[in-house]
Image (cartoon, rainbow, N blue to C red; front, top):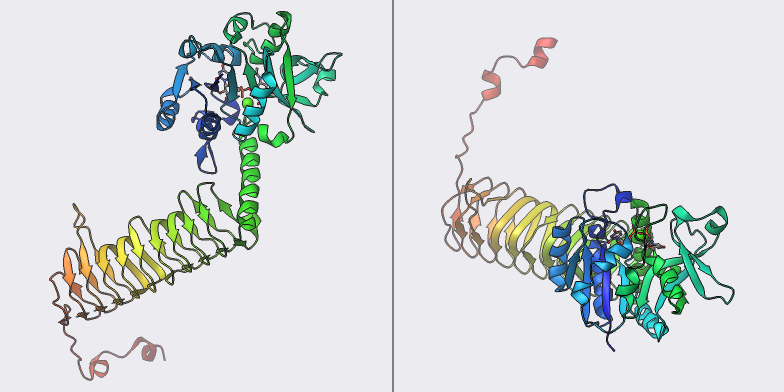
Length: 460
Ligand code: UD1
Ligand code: CA
């Protein structure tokens, strides 16, 4: 019989002290709830229902990306009340129901499948874990036969019970009686809430067995309730990511200083220097190198590409054999072709730098197509914005743009054309021509002598 999954995500997460609903807080760039929904979907359920409440609209926007259903819990009266809100969505559903919490991002689909198997013909099953520091979690009480008998929330626990190290991970499986059982849960406890783990007691009182499945790795059930726990979770996930990539042949220098998101892809023999940050859909090709303190978001580095230190890339690609930096900024829509070179303090936006082309120093190159082996002199600025609109500029193959030139868009510089240093170019320069647009120099002979005595002479 196929199962359904309910994900609880209605709470505010007051311990986060944030305007953002807790389940939308990013863990390595991805919302906590996204991890949970992906885990739920990976178990191939017949239905996923997410219970939303706080910040429901924003949460639902995320859910619509995944195409899963949601229910609304108007008032956050507790986790049992939250599950009850999913009943209409699962009307007539006869299979078992898995429940996970939207703030527990590490739970693996295999664990959920194992829990379903453990449920068998019992009424309820839950995953427990032994923690050295169980603070904050519900404690699991076992009966004389070693069966799970009850859960006590921290708030309701006696000092003796607080010493129990076995905790409720918040991952459950229920048989299809769960909806009738939920009606028997009350809110007579320290929190004044309808507690979901109270179902343990309810099922047992109705003569149904409750199975406790002890987890091997307690880290899998780390619940994120505070900023500190979020940071711990991030550290844990980063450690795993780094270890996995190194096992696949990536070289990391001082790996503990490197930040990378799970969506990033790295190839063997890529080298990451200390302090590198890799985000979004970034891909680093085989043998490519990223220098210290460079921040790459949605960047693509071809095999053997080089990014030196302190480079910022926000969407854009660098082909193999090309290099950028130190201190370059590469913005969306930029394509740097093989053998091209981008030097320090060069900003590119929506620009193509053709094969072997060079822009070595201090330039702004926006909305421009630069042909192969063109040379962009130091201080070149493409003035792409007229105050209202952006315009396109083209620089031909092997063109030579002299230092400190301004190319006022839209303008075309032909193949192998020259622009004299210091020019402000607002008309096309034909191929092989020299464009010069600056005041002629004139020298005034003997000027110094005709001037009044220099200040230094006055002092003497
Ligand atoms: C819960 C369990 C605790 C367990 C721990 C594991 C209860 C009463 N306690 O505690 O036994 O050890 O998880 O991580 O269930 N939510 C709603 N509506 C509500 C209240 C909460 O949707 O009215 C959602 C929250 O958004 C969250 C999840 O349920 O995703 C758990 O709520 P939270 O307040 O974090 O429970 P814990 O105190 O961690
Ligand atoms: Ca929690």
